Image 1 (tube, rainbow, N blue to C red):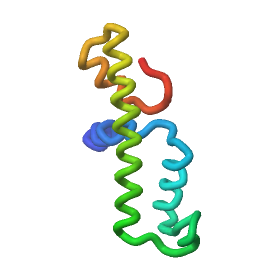
Image 2 (tube, rainbow, N blue to C red):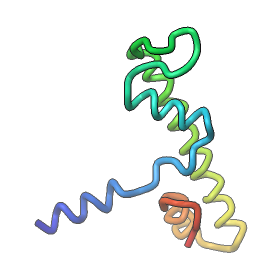
Image 3 (cartoon, one colour):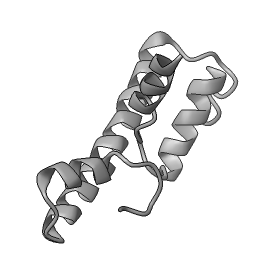
Image 4 (cartoon, rainbow, N blue to C red):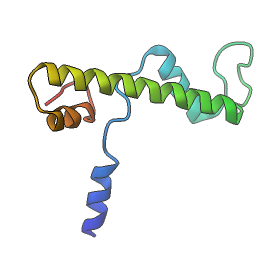
Length: 94
């Protein structure tokens, strides 16, 4: 199924780079669906709280991608090349 290969490439773009401590904690809490710190430690996350964590993690991704994009443009790369670099996984850019 060659169509599956194309779809896997589509979903293999970096969503967020190395997270900060807060982002890493939020990601862990979202996976387990339980508070890990604070007064609510051990209690289940509500849908609202899970949504807040998703929004924070998406913001981390947006900032990391925008940083890589602007850095690539400053290095003289084209807009298409900069976009591809900003969506790659990992710390290194092309």
